[in-house]
Image (cartoon, rainbow, N blue to C red; front, side, top):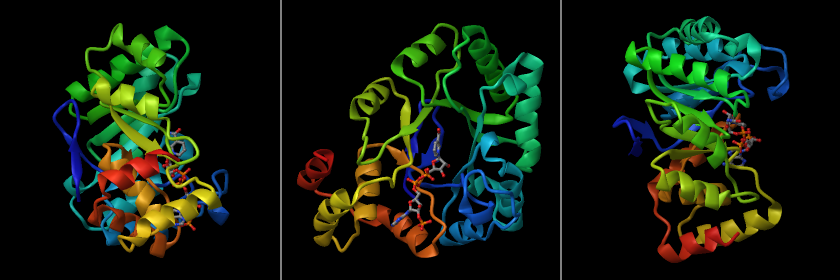
Length: 268
Ligand SMILES: NC(=O)c1ccc[n+]([C@@H]2O[C@H](COP(=O)([O-])OP(=O)(O)OC[C@H]3O[C@@H](n4cnc5c(N)ncnc54)[C@H](OP(=O)(O)O)[C@@H]3O)[C@@H](O)[C@H]2O)c1
C-alpha cells in the first residue's frame, strides 16, 4: 500500500479504515456493543492495515481482538487511537498514564502506532500534561507517533510553546462539503500530515460531478474523491460496512488523476 513519511521519519499508509460504528448494534455510533467485528475482518482480509479507533468509540478491545485473531503480524498494522479530553481521562499525569496503558491493554499490543488527542483541550495546563505523558510513552517505545485531531492553527501554536515532540498528524474533517483547504495547506506548510475524517460525506450534485470526472478512469465518485485527497498528500480513513464499498475505496489508490482533473475536484 502507498504510504507517506511523517515528520518523525516513520511511514503511514495513505488509506485506512474508520471504525466509529464497528461492533455496534445497527451500525450506530451510540449503539450497544455487539462484539461483531465482521466488517473489520473483511477490511483486513481485503488489505486494510491502517485502523482508526478512539477511546470514545468504545470498541478498542474488539479491534485489538480482531487484529490479533487475523493471524497477521502486528508490525503489518498501523493502529491509531485517540484520548478523550474529559477530566476522567486527562485530569493529571497519572490519569493520562492510566488512559494510555488501558488502550495498550484493550488493543492487545505492546505499542500503538499513532496516538492522537481527540479534540482541542482548552485548559493549557491539561494540554501540557497530556502531551508530556504522550511524549513519555514515545520515549518508552509504547507509542511510535503522537498527534492531534481537530486542532486549529491557534491550538497547534499552544502546543508549540512546550512540545519537545512536534505533532506528526492532525486528523480533521475534509470532504467535498467542506474541504478545509486553507487549513490543510497550513498543515502541509508546517510539516504536519493532514488526515481526513468523514471523507465520504457529500451531496448528490457532487457525486454526479465526481462520477463524470471518474468516467475517463472507470472510477466512481467515491474513488475520485479519495484519490484527490491522497494525491494531494492527505491521508484518508473512509469507513464502510459494505465489503463492495470497502474494496472500491481501496482501489482508489490504483490510478492517478490528471492535473486538470485534480483542479476540477478542487473547485467543488
Ligand atoms: N477525529 C474525529 O473527530 C473524527 C470524527 C468523525 C470520524 N472520525 C473517524 O473517521 C472515520 C470516517 O468517518 P465517518 O465514519 O464519520 O464517515 P465517512 O467514512 O465519510 O462515511 C461513512 C459513510 O460513507 C459510506 N461509504 C463509504 N464508502 C463508500 C463508497 N465507496 N460508496 C458509497 N458510500 C460509501 C458508508 O456507507 P456503507 O457502510 O453503506 O458503505 C457510510 O455510510 C470514522 O469512522 C472515524 O474512525 C474521526
